Image (cartoon, rainbow, N blue to C red):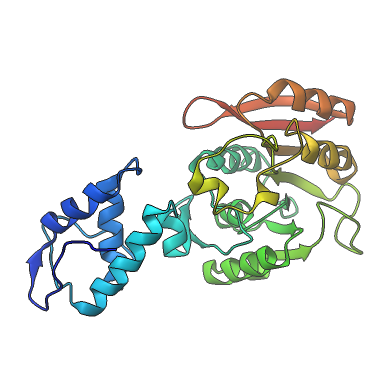
Length: 295
């Protein structure tokens, strides 16, 4: 593709370049921001270039920019181009097996942190279980907020487990985080002991199989992390019945749901021997986090 921009080793102001690039990103909801990021990445910088900055777009940077623009114009998200996404004020590296974290999922972290803060001082370390951990963003964010907590993350994708472990190391919480390649909470000796966990968190797949998604989701997020049967509830049917046996007497489970799934998931939880303790809303004011307790 031609960007109609001439590469040059001379310094020039970024603003006109950002405008030219943005004009080509017709399908983006934030074309100027995307253009600023693409300029930064093409220059080997993991940041968005500001319009007032002077930059040198030489032939090497121009070739890189051309390739990045082509990928973005096909719908690839900026987070995938960067290889990481900010979540709860920390960067989490991604790979093909990990879901790209969304800001709405941060309400699970906020709700779990509020619950953990109620735990009496001097008690045993908070034990956290993250089912379907992906990049580890939820579990590791909680461990960063709770310096004495310990956590276990599971995922059916070995590549996701590898990425979660790498993120734990980068963030300095690896000694308090264990990851296991398994389906939900299938038995692992010495890990899933009855009544062990104070907090269980999960962002399972919950989209109906035939749902139409935007290309930046459908083409770049792993489908096993998105889709859950014809009604979007298959993961909850597999997951919820296993929770009561793993929960400490006063534990809470924080489960992400689709914005219209409060009633059906609540019914499944009650059938599984759980009590619906509350609901947390996401940043758009939609139902997002179902809070469950043992009955």
